Amino acid sequence: MDPNLQESSRGPSIASTILLAMVISLTSCSATQPENPNLGPRAAEKFFLQGEILAEQGRAHEAIDAYHAAIRAAPDFATAYYDLGNQYAKLGRYEPAVEAYKRAIQKDSQMVKAYNNLGLAYTANGEPEKAIVVLRRATGIYPDYARAWNSLGLAYDARGEHSKAILTFKEAIEIEPGYSDAYNNLGVAYANLDLYREAEDAYQRALRSQADNINAIFNLGQLYAAVGEKAKAEEQLAILTAVDPWKAEALRNAIVRGKPIR
Image 1 (spheres, one colour):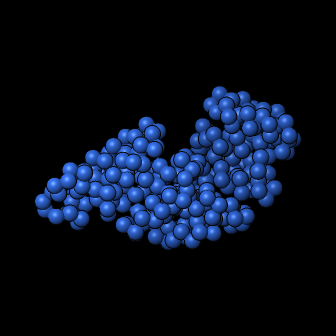
Image 2: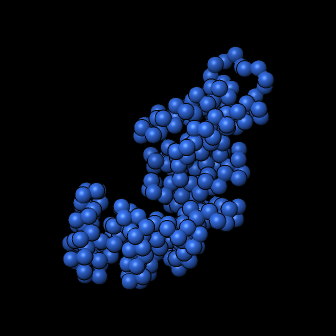
């Protein structure tokens, strides 16, 4: 899954983690600590924090083990299920990611980011219809949550409903005017309808919001290749070569072919 699209719980989550552990201790455990040191809120917090550190280091398999240990210690730990799903998704293991996100939602029905990533996992797994159901629920819970609208647009686009996707990406942008990824995805939806000038404008807006948006640089370059503006395509290739050689090679191939990669 594209890391620009998946919503993480990294960042200033340590304080909330400690608070969550306190909540778990009040709601899920008895007043006395269990004899097993691997059970209970303190053990859950320890394993969860280990998982966070391993995830930040890119050690997804080990992070998965740590999150499972946190869940065994405190079975109602919604955030541990959520982060477990994120690590499975990073490995492209979408089926266990789906199950983890579902469990997170079961434990916390208002965790909108779990709905969002569940929808993304369904779309990545070739199940956009299921994604649409989940993401419409997410936008119903929090109508001002731009990420869910963006993810819903991706699901519509994956299903071939490009016009619906355009309207949905615009909804995300209306909520968050500087949302670079939504502009990029809007460009893709326009390109899928062969509306290249509209797509060009969307990609350029994405780059005005975030100059290092790799996907927007790549998509703008291949759009120029598709419409025969080779010099402009090569300008984007030069930018991309310095930051992402793999994508640069893909764009170089698109320039040679003179058509976009679909």
